[in-house]
Image (cartoon, rainbow, N blue to C red; front, side, top):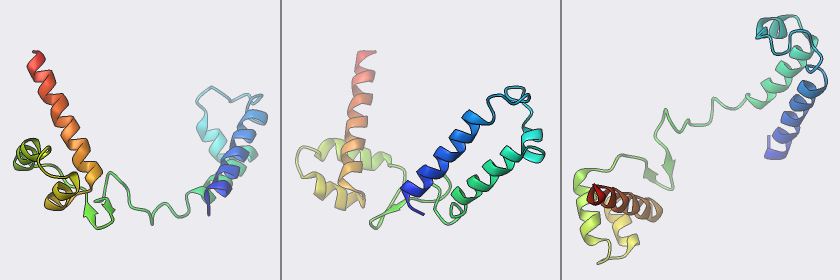
Length: 125
């Protein structure tokens, strides 16, 4: 399912909420149990949302599993890497540092900027 199909389904759910649920006696009264079990509009929304969530189990979660991008694994920075990065950022290219740390050049630049910001905050105290 592509993005446009998913968007159409979300729009249908939104339209159902706007048109059908607005005048419902249970709207806004925290009565989700009634919407989930007895309401025909709730049944329509459940059937539409099931289509959206069919393939979510197959996709890796950014928070539960390691994020792998082009052969790079997301991992925390070590103190030694931070020290080396601060002392060598202006001496060698970012691509060279990325290969040394087994990270992307964007991750190296981002980490350098983060470390510089931390140093400036500490100096301001």
